[in-house]
Image (cartoon, rainbow, N blue to C red; front, side):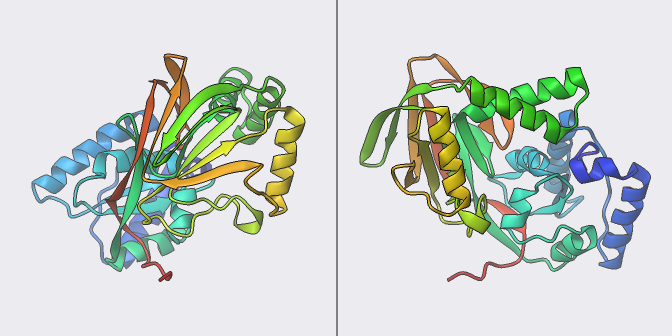
Length: 298
């Protein structure tokens, strides 16, 4: 459990612990709990994997937001260990796309049902992501947001808004060459977004995915380069009026992003890394087993 996750941070640790114990006990699941800060999540996940290997436990459950699930999933992916999810973050995109309930007891009920499915993850230069990766404006917004939270004591959303205005005013444009299957293009763009499967970017379904097992990455390249044009793209997206002239969209199992720069700032599920170019993206189909309701699509 990430003790600093959005929803978890709003409750006292003891209260959350009691709530979790009651939910698992109600569903006849024997569970041990470990509350750790974000910086120690990976080590905790690695210890849990070792416990599975010697038969002490049957599954691993991660409690937190998308960053928490990203960290634990990066350890579990590629194994046969099923991962349970207790959504305790601010947005919980991964849990929502898997149709996992946000209430603690309901999320535990999904785990107790014992139904798990295999979903895809994305990877860039050996680093995994469950939701998306991006280059351009977003990594700068996140870095500035975190700086404002640390030095000015701002909460997450006010810091995010102020950082967004600053990045929008100092719009970063990157000269890139992008190669995918039977396609390549040189571009100058403020934002390149690579999703783990297809993202909806219009209307009420904005930012969601219908499926996470399509075995593909979805590449979005913003073609507009001015502040006003980029703002207009955002407005058209909310109105459901985007087209190929606004945003180049390509579905592909792999993509390479090259730059004259030796390193680029890259966002992975909201975490920022400086990565050496070129960036080699690929999908890893069915690499992660999760407790989740079975999909209803055909």
